[in-house]
Amino acid sequence: MVIITENPRAAKAIAKAFNAPPGKISGIFNSDDLTVIAVPQDFLTPRKLNINTLGKLPYIPSTYNLRQNRRKCQRGFEGTVRKAILAASEVVFASESGADAQARFDNLCRHFNVGQKTSRMWLHSLRRSDVVSSFTSRESGRKLHRLAQTGLVSMAMESAFNYNFNNALHLIGFPDINLTRNEVIVLDFLRAIDEHIDDSFRSASTFKLCLNPGTGMGMMSEQSWNTIEEAETALKSLNFPSMLPVEMEVSLDDKPTQLFSTTTLQIEAFRKLHLLPGRTMTTARSLFNRGLITSPYTQKASITTIANPVASMSRAENRLYQLIRERKTAANRSECITTGKISYSTGGIDFAHALSASRVQNAPLGTSLCGEPFIEVVIREIAPSPVITYDLTSVLSTLVKEFTDTKMPFKVKGDDFGSVISSLIGKQLVKECEGMIFLSETAEDIMDNIGRLYPGANLVAFQFDANSLAAGIGTGKQCIADFGDWLYSFTAEMLDGKLIDSDYAGTVCPVCGAHAIYHNNHSIRCAECNYRIADTYLGRRLTPELTRQLLTFFYTSEVKGLQIEEGQRFSSVLALDANYQPTHVLGTDAEAYRPAV
Ligand SMILES: [Zn+2]
Image (cartoon, rainbow, N blue to C red; front, side, top):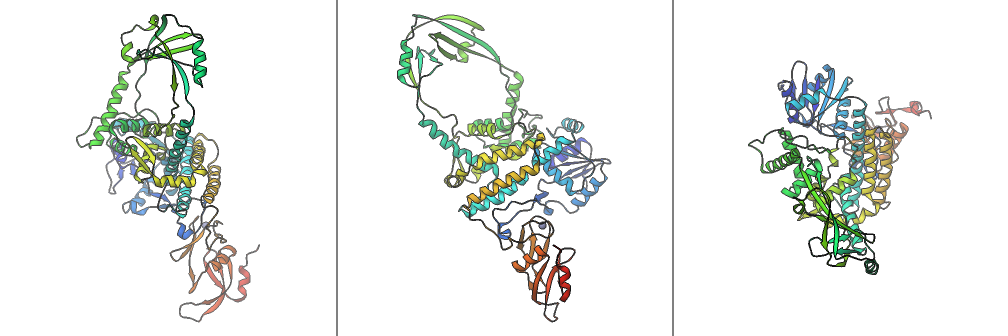
């Protein structure tokens, strides 16, 4: 059996749990019937598209090629992994992370031609007993396949977005800003907050009645009125006795404290420790790697401590660990909270006041009547207040509430909006000041340019489509096609219709049929498959026009100046041979190479 994981610490923990000692190659552990392998997360990476060589914008790839990152591993790693997989009856993927990780595993399986059974163990923690139990309860089948589809589509969307959006951004005057989809969602959201806050301050005040103000027991009317005159009319119709029969309701609420989820941990760590969310996640990840806490990537309230602190923890690790431990203690205590309110109704108007915890601490539970002397009723103006603010913690919780698909069983790492905000602060596109976050001037400029195209709302909609693949809704192909159509027109609109097309626009790849031929590094290549030929043939440069003829129609018009070594120069028609490589066809043979149309 082979267990693959992307986390070197996890590999060590799993190997230890099953008594597999380290092998000769670092990251690989071996026992008689088990091999544990730590494969770097970027072992296979999507081939990067380069606008300077590809010369096309917008460009929506029809396939997304992966390239092996050989520098990532020790010599002999690949061969050893191949051998271990070949001999295994089952290949298990161990991970604490979501659809993106499952997609990477899917790619690995394709790369290593895994034909045998595959399964997945959810690495909730690195504690020996948890590792063993997640191994015995590992899953396989359709659900994992669908999760991988979700991740693959999401990766393809990210790669197409990066190429088109960032190159277009460069061309409209914002060079070297590399934004991801989720970063654009956050920037667009912060821009929308500006508008929302302006709007809410433009809306009018409302009016309420306040009974016995200034007594500490002032009760506000639940009803409100749009004008002061309407409130006055309502007030005139009311009669108050000198002693008000006020109803007091005291109840005991069982409000158990919840453990942290990714977002609540980020919010609390920011509030109490002023750690930016990205820093919280790297710190939590390192606590997880040390086996001290459970996986910090979860939407469930499940982050908890599982081992005692160790001496070598950093200051940030220590503080975050304590925060998680305090929460665990509070959650175990399952405290009950006494709450209370007083209320009074007359003439169809309901007045109420929530009592502070100290006031009701010793009050008897249940409903009782008490007398409260009537003092006065006044009209209060209630100023409009925006529902959302620039406060980082409220921005974060709104982002998560509105833009995260809670039906997804496990998060995609990029869905962690806290870390996205941190990375934007690092790129100086978002500024943080005393707990408030704002767009920087550059980010405001960018959003002024593209805000009209609503990138945030669109990106979220497509991400939700991609996520629903995990539930078996729709097909990945359709998802990518829809996203591609939108991205194409979005990019074209960013460029104001000034599309870029290369010298090879009319050239078709003879192998895969894609319009994706480009010239780079003395060769002519296809961006969609591995097809390539040299950019010269027998001393003649293959111009874009010759290339177009050769690749698209499989033969060229007559080419002069061909030369074999030091021999006589001659002319010939060029054609593609059975391996799609250039060859020359002398004289009447040329006819034979005309494709039958
Ligand atoms: Zn091709």
